Image (cartoon, rainbow, N blue to C red; front, side, top):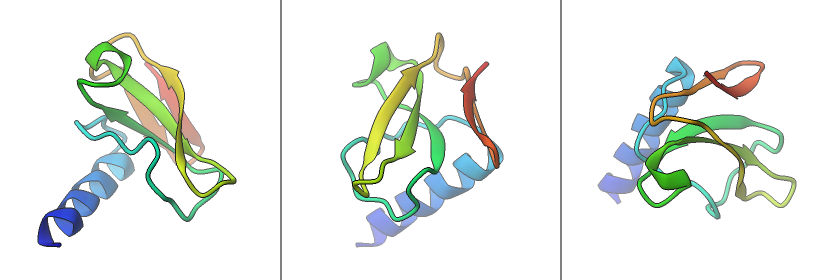
Length: 82
């Protein structure tokens, strides 16, 4: 349980800072429909960063892939590839 809490906290901090981090939220539950974020995981988009969204189904979904592992930025207005 501590691992999940620590992982969630690290991801939250990384998203607030606008930095992609090695984490794959796709398919996991969420509670902020319409919220966007950046992430990077070896199993998604060839290891490059990607944008995900909290869909209306309360699950994170893949939105778009970026060109490199650190080419994604999340802001209060959304997320975009850099």
